[in-house]
Image (cartoon, rainbow, N blue to C red; front, top):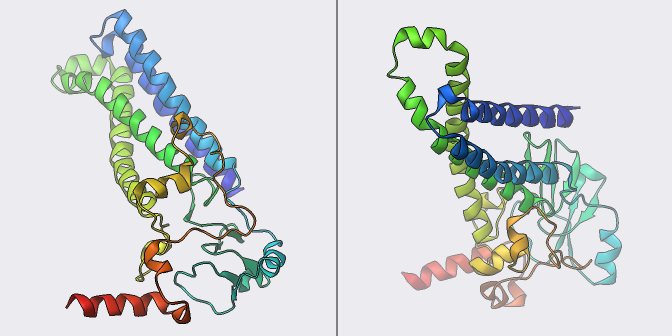
Length: 294
């Protein structure tokens, strides 16, 4: 029920702001644009809003990567080590066990979501705005949702703000007689600027996370990241091979690993002696690096 309410709230808010923008844009009193320019500006805004809402639908309704019961058998078939201890750290190429899901065996980087009450592959966080988790299979859609949201709000603010500035200098008599017009203008500008500021921060945050191949959960880890394969390869882990589909909320091709679900590791990790591969191997390696640099 909460997920459905979140969906309705974001849908209503987005549609309301966009409707206010189109009202302000097409109202001759609220802007000095010619008729042709108003039509062009409205037409150019439509693809941005469509891609924004399309991305929202995909990240809301697409399976984020819920863990099923097949991973234990898969670990036995592929001789993959299962870490039975509860470790809040990287567990490269090891499966783990969730005590909240009746000791469900799950692949590396999977975590339990208290809101969804399920484990999610490469879980990032539970987002109340989309009403579900952000994980392996909808991270691309979530990032595009943020990106197109930012582009849409910037576009709205840039094209409508000039009239808003002029309206601040109009006489009180004119403002009193045009309350509806100024109300729509005020809502459009304030809402777009507020969302734009928030989305700038969130986009910068996720550009950094994707470039480092980490999640919000993993950003709290202090050990060296074994999954950092370089900026371009890290983006391919989310978007697939670079092509025009990167820019649209379409499911990436050949993105998800096969059923053994072992993530590729960087050279720093692979150079560590296998004898030292326990839950503290990365911390020990970091300490040795610090001593060498002193």
